[in-house]
Image 1: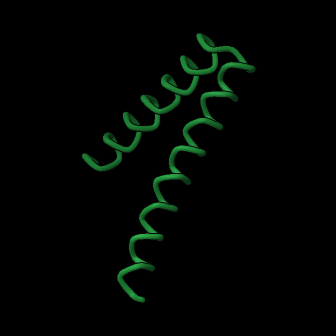
Image 2: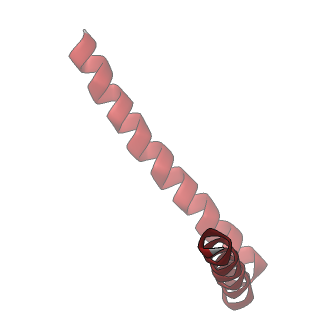
Length: 57
């Protein structure tokens, strides 16, 4: 029962945060923020993979 309650609370929190994100940023700015987050993550992953590749050579 405790796990079910925590799962419901987590789902509600995620829904509220998603609503607030799109409500306060709007569709255009929200899309820009999401693309920026993805690009920064890809850049970091690329640098990590380059370091690992250098170590293997």
